[in-house]
Image (cartoon, rainbow, N blue to C red; front, top):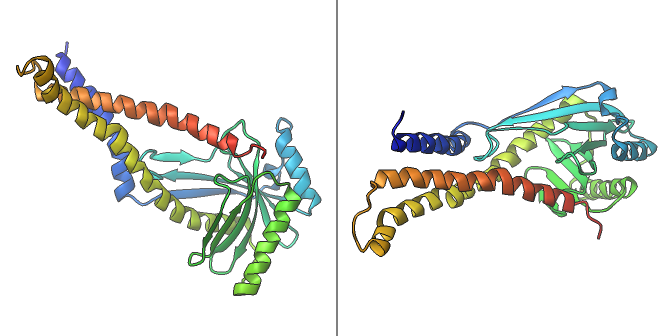
Length: 281
């Protein structure tokens, strides 16, 4: 039977590697974002058990859009917290008759209403997206990257399409940029181009969680049990345990705190935020 300290250190090392290795890989490995393309129009049609998508599908069909296919994204090393990510249901696409304006549908969590957006692509890998409900309810404009995203809450497809057309008209007048014809394969390539740029930028925020919920608590706990607790409670007498024991114990404490925040609190908070984005008013 292994001595208790060895078991403690084995757990501490395994937990530390599980937390720190994805962060290291994110820092040194390129983001590997992939987008599988299925050009079967039937894959964009709603199933019988999804009435919410059926409604939105019919509304956009009445506006002249027809099924195009589906794309499905996966990503390695998308953040320091998550080495692998895959799309929940993929993204289903409709196209207008000229294949210059498109509609996409997706979900972030299974029990939310379907999210829908109107998208057009411009020369030079530019993209204009008008989406409902979005995640922040704001307008994102990156003139240098030719990326424009408008997020609206509580709008119907017809109103969303009008807002999108107004954005296109403004760009045509200001920069003489007009939508171009696209295939689904070209759409997937454009989505990858901008997705890699956005993932690499947003993923860095995960490092702060590792510091605040793992490294910080682990170091504080180790210092406390090795020096503060003996001095205050034991009147300066040395601890019967070695500093290495306290370090291993503290790494386990930090890992437990990190796991609770990462695996329980964050998914719960994300789900609540996703559902709130659909709230009326």
